[in-house]
Image 1 (cartoon, rainbow, N blue to C red):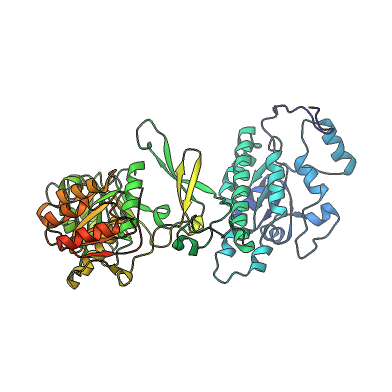
Image 2: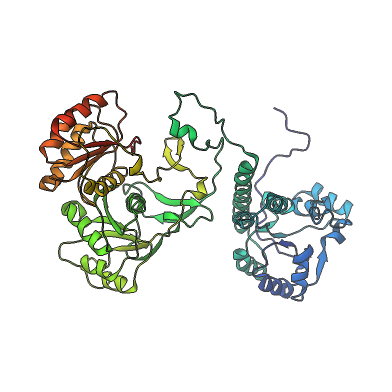
Length: 554
């Protein structure tokens, strides 16, 4: 293939240190412009600028050359066009080691820019306002700014580009040291391209919603159940800008490197966690925290959830948080050792005192907030005080930043679904057996069906009142999950309730449930053998209700 007429062989630039004699400054965010102005003035750097930036620099004693003087053309269209001109872009893009480039500049009386200092319109901030109008958002789509940034970043061999007030100190130090190095300019360029990519990602996401760019909502009856068909259609494209939020020592195993990434700007859910103390969080800690906090958030009363390997081994709700925590820890004491604990209320002193009992040890405690007295106790009293991590997880919709979608990684792909966060309404449940549950058991059935939705399928939860006492998780047959849950519960199963995350495919579990003394069953129903299962429950005298909604968690 022949090169294009204007193409030249690419060579690695040999110029390292480049002095900064002339800069272009055009910033929407004026933070730090005072110290930038002082440094440029002190170094005798020539400054070209636009509009409000020009006025801000002048107010700090900097002599500014207006861009319109350089272009010979005024700002037009309410400022939509001001820097888009060859006298600006040739000064940014000219290659300092190319005689032909320098000859063009000389022929047209164009001066080079050694640095471009630009940040962009606050599009993301504007669209986050509840009353933001589309016309207002569209006016905040920056055109000239990204073009300047990209041009300077492309020509980073000869032009430095700064896109954030946080980089001013680095640039100021370079000015004082005689110029920027090639390594510095490369780093500035990489940050600049990240900046414009993130900016375009936010705009693309907003514009997709504004334009109704979604997948075809039409589905055949066989393609999706009615409940999914009634949900909003999924986006045709998902554009994410993820930033590394939390570096981790390693992944699931020591030989795997890992970090936590989150959509830029979001501070809800685990993306906004604040660690108060303790060792750094691990990859596995975060997976367990996700499981624990998501289940705790589904429970309206004061509640505690104890998680081991992403599955609850204890969960309870009560009038007081410390009561719920004590019950949850006692559900499976062996598994609770070294567990992750999450609560849905402020972690108080009484709850902290409960964990000081001999033989108890937890890896992480997560709560919306902690009382200072609780922090003091947990970080000074128990033998594991230096190990425990106390983590505040802010409330709010963590799915907002991903367009309301839960994402899970596959090898080379990503699965997306609407998260299973809507609470079930017992008023819609259907009694399918001749015998109805005692009305006093309804809170327990509701609680059990809430807990089972966060167990790994096939899942069975056995509860006494609003306390989990036995869980069967992740088995390849539901009868095995049933057997494990009942064995875990032991005598505590008698008079309790049992919940299944999906239908019983056969009637074989019913006899196990009857023999354990369970008082009522709640399950989604929907099996072609529902009639056999109902008949077995009737024969055993077991009340059973169908919820009509499955809650698999793979």
